[in-house]
Length: 160
Image 1: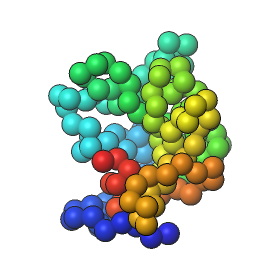
Image 2: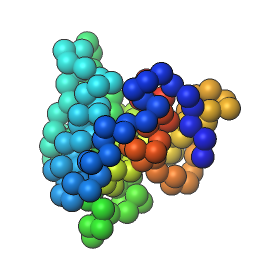
Image 3: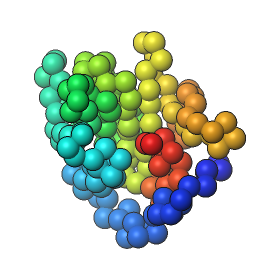
Image 4: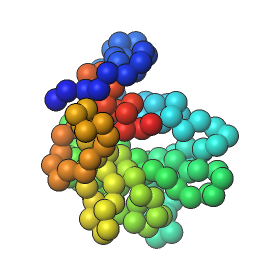
């Protein structure tokens, strides 16, 4: 996979190199991704809500809300690497359920330091992947997770 070249500090996150070994429980995994999301969706224009209940009383790990219109923009569902539910299929399905219950169009499924971005296209959930040749995100039907250490440029490009 090739990543797009982006300005520092997003080309590599070398200062995060000590974090993946610490991502052993779900709250730490979710905390890392909440802090990354806060860099792209800063307060007071956005609020990142942990443990957000949906209208159907399900609970998502994180939601990013846009304050201007109060709408949920992005749902994040995280898992610990090696956990019983730690598959991208399960995490994406869970995020997709929460997205449909809240109207969020974009989602993230994270397992440890890796993440998959998803988007609704009609009623189908598709994976987003940044393609450097095309210059923007495209929808895919396969799981190809991005890692915060080796794919930070692609993560940056999807989140901006």
